[in-house]
Amino acid sequence: MRQLIITFLPSQLWSRTRACFLVFLRYQIYYGYPLQTYLEYPILIAQDVILLLFILRFSGNMKRALFYAVIFWGGWYMLTLRKWIIDLAMNLCTLISAASKLAQLRCLWQTKDSGQVSALTWSMSAYTCATRIVTTVMTTNDLAVLIRFITMLILNIWVTATVLRYRKTKKTD
Image 1: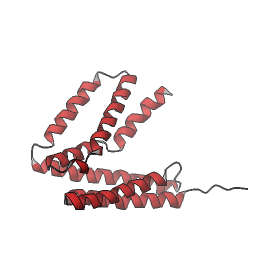
Image 2: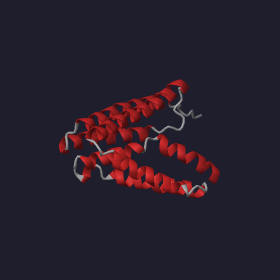
Image 3: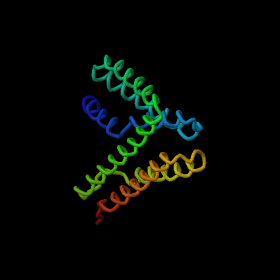
């Protein structure tokens, strides 16, 4: 069981584009936006760091923790060397996040089976994006952030609809 968790978690941790959390957090701080607009990101990042430390600890690779810390610090610093770098990184994260959702959609279309994919989870993601659009308009009105959340809202709704379409109904006698 422990080996299963060790091999499963790294791919899940990084395949969900967690690096974009760092970029988004740094973007919000760089432009001096209110703490309420990005408060969950430090919590999500801390969760990922703790998870990564557990993975490194139980796989016997704690020596890599320093390497990851240096990469994190370097990336954190380099994002704000120039304004265009942080802006480009923000836009690339939107593309990366969209690509991951499109990959999920492609998998659903190919298999025509939603399996264990939760429509509730995807609909909650869509709801979160919708509320983030409203709060962004009310607080910062940042176009890059709005484009990100509008894109994610559309794709989250699309994934939710696809999951519902391919959901198998249980037959009862």
